[in-house]
Image (tube, rainbow, N blue to C red; front, side, top):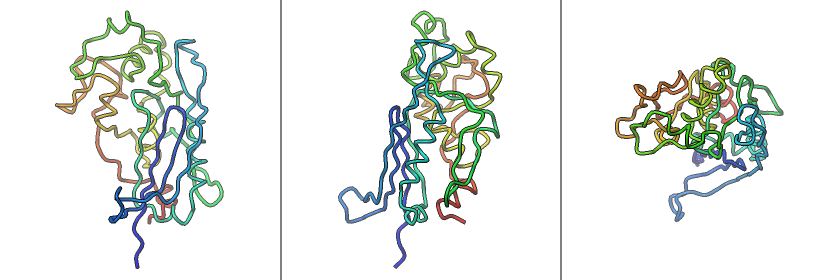
Length: 242
């Protein structure tokens, strides 16, 4: 009997990283069963050089280390059955990276892992650098959401005003889950879902487009795409693909 494919679920939370292997179970009340799971504390909080005590930033290297530890803890035979990967994570936040230099794949044990390279800290949804006066100075968004501190586009505006040199080191941005998907799939630019785009501000969910005529944000803000199905060769190998 052919075994059912397994789905790998990854959650990149504010305080912890989780991974689970799920198998469809039509007769089960939930429709699936959890074959294995793992959770690790992220421990990624770090100081903000630009925003000082108002900043809330996390070290992306620590987040990915926790992710790799979770994947290492899952049964290798079950990982070989993975046919799909679902990724969720903390919304609103933003990190920046350099196209083609966001990570480096290495062999660790019997499986490849990736480690961040030309990547900024993650500015999280808890960030407080954008005070009420600064937010009031921003263009009004054509969106169902107002812009708040900790939103990705608000952070970009703040950096444009207070640390313009910082942005010159990067040409791509996304949420932490966008970054992980881009690295796993070998994407030159991230594919952002509409809910993550809306969480940044300046995104119209009805027209499915950024407020490009008002936000004037730099290149990292691109219209979202909704699928990231082309796995990189490295993750195909780890997931048992061809």
